[in-house]
Structure formats: C-alpha cells, structure tokens
Image 1 (tube, rainbow, N blue to C red):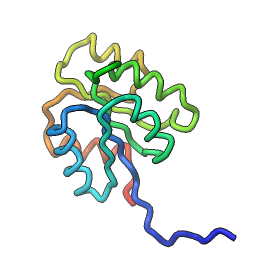
Image 2 (cartoon, rainbow, N blue to C red; image 1 turned 90 degrees about the vertical axis):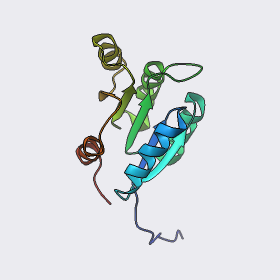
Image 3 (cartoon, rainbow, N blue to C red; image 1 turned 180 degrees about the vertical axis):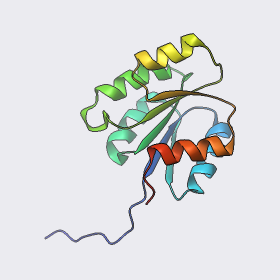
Image 4 (cartoon, rainbow, N blue to C red; image 1 turned 60 degrees about the vertical axis):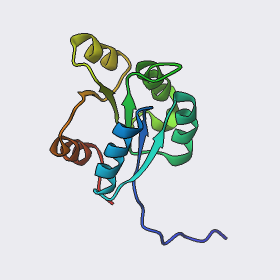
Length: 131
C-alpha cells in the first residue's frame, strides 16, 4: 500500500542557462513567490531534469553552449509529458529574428533581458498557479 505524502505541493520552475548571475537572480525572485527553482547549465542535463521534476514553467536561455535554446525548445516540445508546459526563451537582444526563431521553436514567448522585478512577478502570475 502506498503512503500518501502530506507535503505541500510546490510548483517547480526550471531555469536552463549558463549565466549563474542571471539564473541566481531569477531563482531568488521566483523563490520569493513560493516556487521551487531548479537551475540547469546545459541542454542535455535539462532534458533529464524535465522528466524527473515535471516543471510548471521553463525559462530557457537562447544562447546555451553545445546547442542553442531554440533547438532545445523544439526537443522539449517533442516530449509528450511536457508539451503544454510554458517555455519562455530569454534573450539579450530584442529583434524580429529572435522573436521569429522563438515562435518557430514553439516557445510560449520570448522575453528580452534586462527585466524588472515587476515584469517577472507578472509573468509568473500569468503562467504558474500558486501553491
């Protein structure tokens, strides 16, 4: 007989990016909203973490080492268990080409950095139901 867990559910947000300063800042902002945040530095590790932790939101750096965030987004969208998870691609440059590549990769949206704390609180409220 399986024992039920009485632990409160905390939604997981997965940050995929190799800039630890930016990822750390995002983590602190999201944790302040009572979210559990996982940071992954590369795409291969991210793919295994997604199936283990079932995130409710993925923040994805467009410029990852090995393969870029647009390619990784396409791979994530092919995985059955996370097809509906919102994916926000983060880019340092605002351009039509970046937005087009994010759309073609089937990202939920593309967000340009830098950002304000208020912007992130708004995005999280839009895509994540609080615990």
